[in-house]
Length: 348
Image (cartoon, rainbow, N blue to C red; front, top):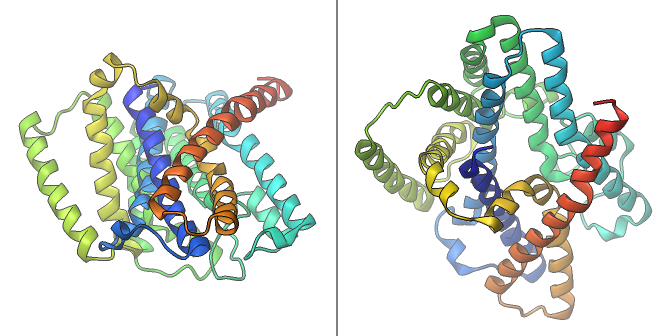
């Protein structure tokens, strides 16, 4: 595992924590840091998901570069590896969350238990709740649906097109993006294929192809200049323009691609220095991503009752610290042992 990418995974997860902490602060405390009133800064942490998708495309391409999927055995091994990594913890947390909804629905202000909702969540099928949003039982689990959609396209392409599989993956995802560009989420089918961030997986795949081929498109100085120009444009758009809908896959996707590229360039820097905490947050990023909303809800409700006048900046800080601690705890005590136990049961 590249140290730079692992650290960036942790940072991406923390960005998602921040955007949700701001939202919780607004809902339960009636305020949020004034700093986030600038343009779209209130939602900037959402780019953590875009970064995750680019990283996922990159990592999957890297994995199969070393272990190509050329036969059924390799395909099954790939599927097993993805299952062990994602499904056990997600299923466990989904069932626990659903149990709370069933036993004590008053704990959550905007959710009620629904068996059909639970089934679709367990199967990673998009489900539209009463609010109109397409969320599984664990709201942030929606991204896993697109992870598996990407895996399916990627494995299909590699299995049938061998060495050209990565480029075929990029072509298929690009075609999907163009065909469904601008469409609303009016059905499960559209929710699956009209998601603008799906294109970001292909950015990661392309980056891995160039990385493995040792291709350098720009000199280091030119690359830095391109980054600086793009950074200025990014700040301008964040402060002045709402980038959502189908264009998100282009704007935030390219921004995320440049961020991942920059971290890769400094791989040697990260390897030489001992970033233990950041690396640990990166290792536990999946647990952190899945459980942080629980931490935020507990903190927000607790402070709203015991200390409703708490400074919103302080609440954000508490949210980050306690989310990291609980994420690491879940990673070490639940995620890793559960993954190893699942492997044993399934005869890995």
